[in-house]
Image 1 (tube, protein in one colour):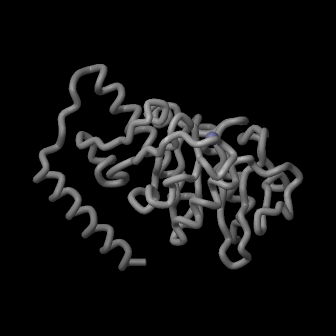
Image 2 (image 1 turned 180 degrees about the vertical axis):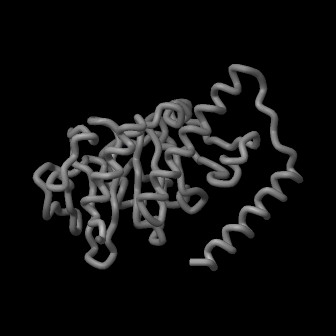
Length: 217
Ligand SMILES: [Zn+2]
């Protein structure tokens, strides 16, 4: 049975809530349907764990055409992300604690001590502060999302884009876990960088196996 976009929003809202990556007031997720030009997005001020299909807001040309609850006030951010990356259909905006701590410090993240970070993420740029709920928050987003699928929003949170919601949820989970572990590592000692030559080999092997997997399909 084909899962509807509403069902997917409900499923991943619950999952990300369970993981502490979204909650009632913080974070929102969306899926763009290019065939119908519709944006499916979580509603405002509803606990994501209790979300129901009929609460999912559906937007067409900025106007809400379906859903019992008003769309998230951060829909402009989601629209800007989809416009910046037409190859992506899913957006997660989160106030994930460890990633957001970097956003509070207006600090981009580039670390060479984690194989997961090097392979799945590589770099997390940080944008300067912009007023939430306005287009100001999207300043620089387009360029940053061309550099990385995951970007910090200064003094606010994080946004990530992917081809589908499953990959998008996986990316935010991985990024938050890696940065949490990195933070713990800095309390134990000084995280050791993987030698540059090893990083090159690692990336080469990973992209070769990725190409192989893509061919299997
Ligand atoms: Zn936010």
